[in-house]
Image (tube, rainbow, N blue to C red; front, side):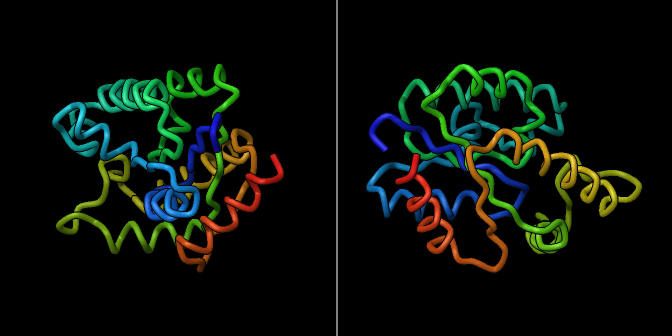
Length: 176
């Protein structure tokens, strides 16, 4: 882990944040959640930034990611839409020490978790469409393919605890 930065990616509510914390315990490295860092840096929640306009959120996301990489955080849990941020992806493509890991969960599992976590019954702003479920399914499919292409490896995270997933990541990292 000494010279590596592990970037845990995946769809919204795939378990990235909890997995990052569990991986941090295994590897004795500090883990950070990108969305929480964005809020700390900007003073606004990712949801509030996105509601101002997706471009405001994406800019804050890229700046936060760059800051975390400069600070040499070893484990970063990305937001579910990072793959749609060209500035962040450009940053990742220039850094060989960053190892993107994709947590793969089904679209249905992600959808049920999104519904369960809806703040006050409000879905995330990117799902405020005529048919939120169809929007989610289309995003999930498109993003999954992009994340799998970006990732150094994929972990099938369906029905696994954060600790199980973190253990699998730690084992896979030994082979890199």
